[in-house]
Image (tube, rainbow, N blue to C red):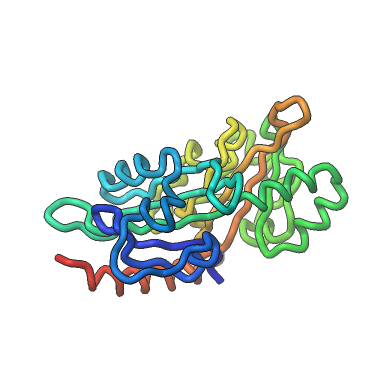
Length: 260
């Protein structure tokens, strides 16, 4: 089940399509006809830096781009939103369709910070969720992984700790850029970036195990101590293999209807 909001925008950033999750999560009523994203619901999504991010993405040819925003959202309060965008159709050499996903990390980060106060309660919580969890301390040393992470990667904490002597985390788990033979760039790894104080989300990581591909959405975030220093970095690994296939089919259908 896809819990992210998905949008399709045209070159002028008019909203052509959005899934039900978008309207429900942001409390927006669907309207007939294309309207500029930043005019919908009285400018609810006119957030600092978002317009510039989408304009820059239109200049990209293939790569996904990511933006994490922490801002006041009308009717929602202080929110941490992760945006992923990619051009999916071109007309006359310019981007004519833009696919945008929005992942709300607000409650997730709040829960992590609260649960980190109780190690036992935290461990019980993360073992009960259907997502992979991997945590390192401020030095980058592994200190926790749950069984879903071990199942996804085929690696345990001690395996990774040994591999990190000669490799990055993405190298230790054998990650690739999705649908390529390129090893996943360590500088894009959300866990590595979290150690630098950045919360990010990527959807282009792939693992290959037992002759099959596992496509992952990976979200990373720093966890701070009472002095405001980074104490831990955490990454959440979500298997999006099925939803990726479903999403690709839907994007293909939308792209066929694009003006051309």
